[in-house]
Structures are given as structure tokens and as C-alpha cells.
Image 1 (cartoon, rainbow, N blue to C red):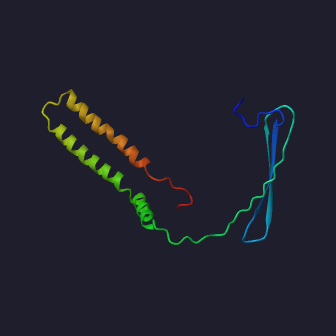
Image 2 (image 1 turned 120 degrees about the horizontal axis):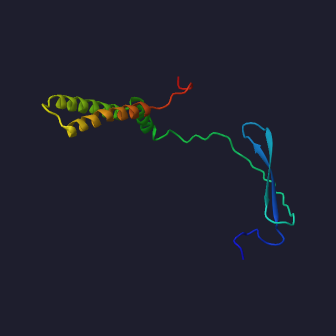
Image 3 (image 1 turned 180 degrees about the horizontal axis):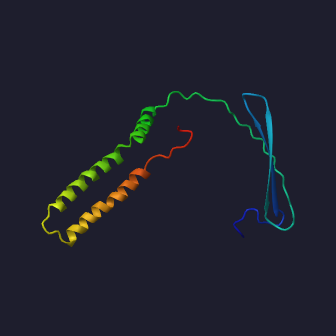
Length: 143
């Protein structure tokens, strides 16, 4: 016994030709779509045709006011202002200023101290790339 429910001797091939009729409630026009799909299951050549009549209601439904409008406005405001990347860049600039002033104030900096400054300064390129790349892409529709 196999797991396939169509695996028997009298049902070998299934052909589905579907005619979809779409009726709009706003007007009385009817559009027919014909889609044919053939699924081969066996060798005897048994085919079956299935017609499907699909009716789609396109009328608008009034669900009332959206209870999450304030959250949507907050999300759009945060997306437009981008406060968190701005805060991170500001903190990085302050850190960079303090580290560079500390390093310049050393009498004889050693290899570890110069490595620390090099890492902090090099991280600026990563921070800048993340800040510039984090913005939403602009398309011709947005302008």
C-alpha cells in the first residue's frame, strides 16, 4: 500500500480544466478565465475535467475606525525622524573625541594604546556605513 491516494488501477491521470467566473457586485459584467492543469498519475490515460464557478464579492465593508492609528503614526514618526541612529552616531562622535584627546595627551603611547585608537577610529567607517544604509529607499512615488 502506498501513501498516494490516487495510486490505484482505475485512476491514472487527472486533468483539471477550470473555468473561473468572476461576478462583481458593483456591476453585472462577468469575466471567464480558462486555466488548464494536467497532473499525470498513471499510464492508462484516464482524464477528469473539473469546472469551478467562483464568485467574488468586491463590495467594501465599513469596519469602523482603526484602533491602532496612534501606533501607526508613532511608527511613521520614528521612521521619519530616525532618532536611534542619530543618538548612536552622536555617542560615537563623543567617544571618538575623548579617545583621540586621551591618546594625544600620552607621553609615550605603546602598541596596545595605538591599537585601541585605531579600532575606535576604524569603527567610524562601519558606524557611518550603517547610518547611511539604514534609511528607507526613496522611489519616484515618494517625491
